[in-house]
Length: 228
Image (cartoon, rainbow, N blue to C red):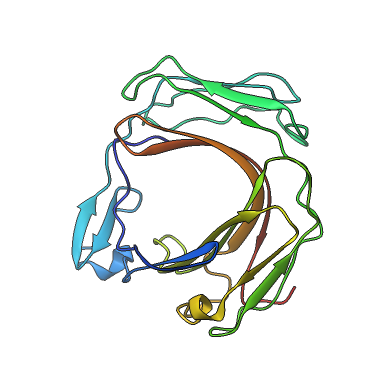
């Protein structure tokens, strides 16, 4: 989806070390505002419902360079984008040129390009123990892709409270320092806010309503405080 601005959040950058940063904020669960905020349209910020920016699609998006062929993401009635059918299995090969374009609409025309990446394989991670270093490993690949790691905690349907966000070289290993994991409070609700890591390439443009990105990635999802 493309909106006219960023979705409201209480998160702010609070620390950075090496390749990793921590974003932290207060609860913004919709049911904590009275009356309850409208799901998918508002955030509860400091006890007040704050409206999300309006949808601002850039016209139907055409995706080229995919293995199954060209895909078109149509703009739906409410301003969301629909998904194409028949796109199962591998969508791109390593090194393939992948691009998106659109004619423009509420947001100006888009033209972004990225490159297909190798499969993200043999990923392992330590169990996150606040205050201790957390080690992650994977099989590295050649090329210009980067590795992104996002460790999150929060509740389903609400903004994340604490996020550890890392972008690092694709060299097969990353250590998240204990000084940053010490800021991560493990929630009591099990799987809430699954974390992810991915090999990716990305193109970014800002047309006045915040960054719009094309990310081509091979991803693994996991829960940071569960076993490997």
